[in-house]
Amino acid sequence: MSTEEISRGLKHYRRIAKQDVLRAPETPNPDAFRVHAESRREIYSALSDCAAAGSSEDVINRALDYYRQLPFVTGTKEGEFPEIKGKENALENFFLMIGLDPKVRREARKDRKSLQDFLTGK
Image (cartoon, helix red, strand yellow):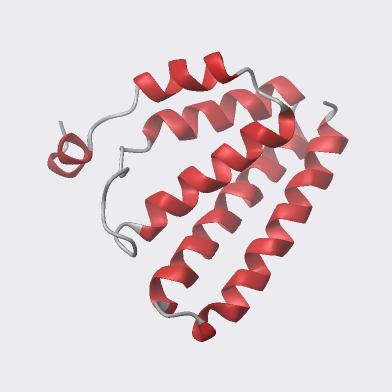
C-alpha cells in the first residue's frame, strides 16, 4: 500500500474512534470505553504522522515496534487495562487493513512481555 492509502485508512479509523469517544457516556462502562477509543485514536494519529513523514515500510515498522512494546492483557476482565487493549486493537486493525502477513504479526507478538513483567519493569 502507498502511504496515501495508509493515511486514508488511518483517517477512517480515527473517525470511528472519535465517534466511540463521543458515545462512551451511553455505554455500560463509559470510562473504560472512552479510554479504549482514545488509545486507538492515539495510535492511528501516531501512525498517520509517520505516514506523512516516511514510507509505507516506515509506518509498518513503527506499528510493529508499538505492538512489541505492549504487554499481553489477553484474559483480563472486560474494562481492565483499556488503554493497552485499545492500542492493541488499533494495531491489529492496522495490520488487517494493510494485509500484513500473519506470520510477521505472530513474530512480533512473541516479543511482547507478560503483563506481570511489564508491571514490575522486568
